[in-house]
Image 1: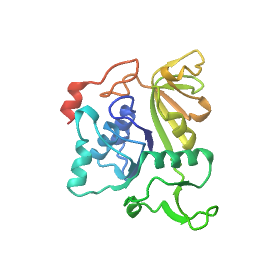
Image 2: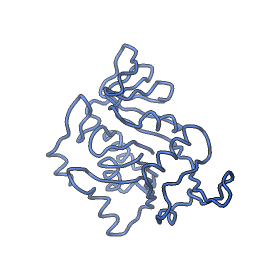
Image 3: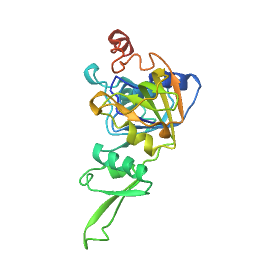
Image 4: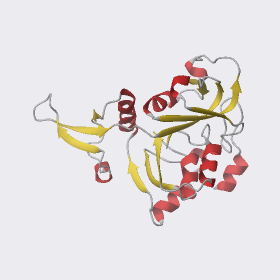
Length: 231
């Protein structure tokens, strides 16, 4: 299950709460490229067996408490650390349909220790040079919460996000939105929203308040009291 970076706002929180209620266990989550309240909540619910991400934090609210407890106590999650640039390239490889991508951003780190999807190989085009080969990220399902969608699946989410790229890389895409509109949506200016064409969307659910206790772009702000109680 993959989601794009969300520290507090614009995450599919209602979807995740229902996933928890269904009693699903041993799920692999991917946070592209970072994670926040969304991932911390599912960790606390005990449904995460593996987490692939570059960072996890609640931003101004501080460290992610359930993640911190897991690391300090029993570390029951298989944590696959990464860097933003390398993960971004791995998702792009998933979009292109290629099995792997060459990257350079991990030299001098110990990230290789816990990742079998990263290999060091000889550069076939430069004699004597090693190169890192990273497996493509192709999630089974990507989940987003958006501002609105139409009956064709065209969706607008918050601006300046990697939602389209992740949708293109994923086998299935589910979107919850504040509103399903009757008129056909078109791509807004990049500063006003991220557009996911309906061709990449498998299911849309109208779910007002679906990002609570986080905020949703142009709809509502985060519920600070609720988040402080969560912490």
